[in-house]
Image 1 (tube, one colour):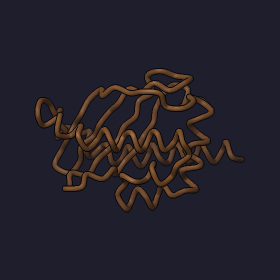
Image 2 (tube, helix red, strand yellow):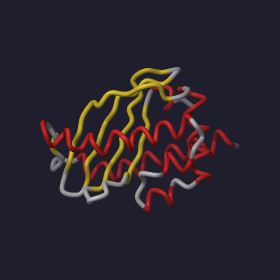
Image 3 (cartoon, helix red, strand yellow):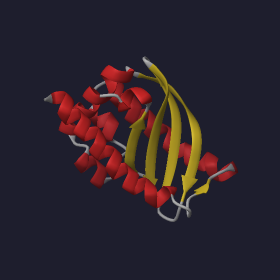
Length: 150
């Protein structure tokens, strides 16, 4: 039953994140470059570290620290455990990442990473940040061929 619940969790997470990303990934989203990109990386890189290392270390406080209230509520400790059960057995622990692209619209900044995990290289990790002064994470999504397998 855990596997079935994990699959449902991944599908729900992908659906919710897709809805958020459609707001940021539509025709109005534009690439962020130069000094503006560097400014985004100043807040996004530490948040990405917290999220990914929190999963590795089974540390919910670190994982959820950069989240906005809505994401923290939907990705509570029970859902965090399900996320770990869905990700870690398939791709292993997070190892490293590279920024693939940075996009923004009026409300969100989306960072798309190509990440290396112990058992798979090229895992897409998307983090969506609110464009507010504190830049909380409002969306999170993982995708790879292994993660899509049943």
